[in-house]
Image (cartoon, rainbow, N blue to C red; front, side):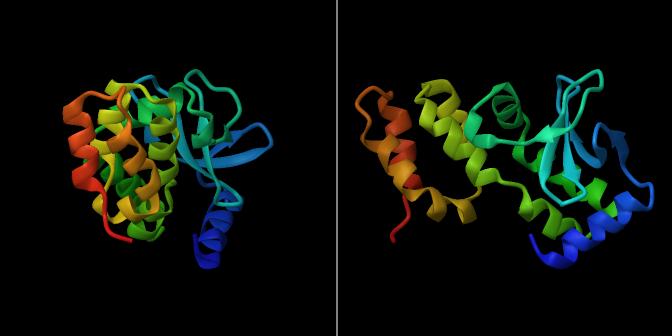
Length: 162
């Protein structure tokens, strides 16, 4: 994320935009099916706020928690469109905000779990522009004998040259 975007988010939140949260404010950009919200804090770091309130917490895709899995249950186009629409409404550059979401980290965390159904969902959620950053993980899926053959074939098709 660019310094300019960080400054814009900080300025927006310091001016009373977004929503209050313990320890400051955050700008919710996506609401998941559970009601949990994902957005940006005053440092323009991605955070999530659980349904029913509670403080916004650092969004840690590598934890592989329920929020990470729920993100993947959203259609990627809808997820990205929600980010862009909310960013636009807040006066932020929509594409830059959407591109700053740690999508590759979300997919990486899910692939590390080795669950076939979630692996299929993660590979399907992935944008081709993110595939190179996940090349090693995708190749590992393609070679994993515990994965179903169609899933290994999908991973092999997604493997891009170095």
